[in-house]
Length: 129
Image 1 (cartoon, rainbow, N blue to C red):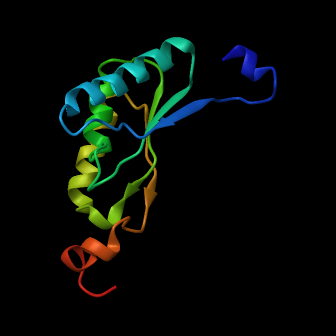
Image 2 (spheres, rainbow, N blue to C red):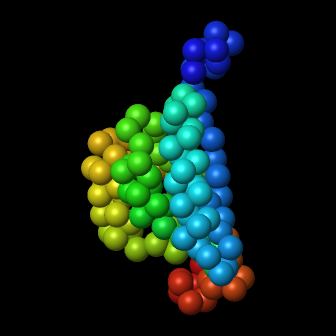
Image 3 (cartoon, one colour):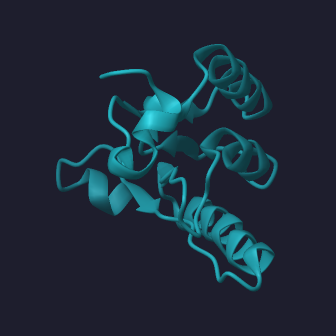
C-alpha cells in the first residue's frame, strides 16, 4: 500500500473472526473468503483469521487458509492464533504444511499455549495441568 508506506508503515494486514450464522455456516465462511479476496485487491499485505472452537467461527485455520489460498495470489495468509492445547501437533504440522504449499509459501502462523475453554474442556483434553 504505497500511501501507507509514505507514513513509515511497511505492511498492513487485517484480522477477522470468520463468524457465521448457526443456520447457514457456508454463507458466513464464503463472505469471509470474499473478504480475503477484496483485501488483496485493495492492496493489503496480509489477511488473518482467528481460530476458535465451540463457537460459530473458523475451527480450523489451516483448512480455511488453504481455501483462501485458492482465491488469492499475493496476500500473506495468517492465523491469529491457534490454541495448541486442542491440537495434535503432528496433525497440525501436516495441515499447516499443506496449507503453506497450496499458498506457495504465504502462510504466517501464530500459536497460543492456552485453551480458551479450559474450564469446560480441560479435563477432556489434558491430564493434570
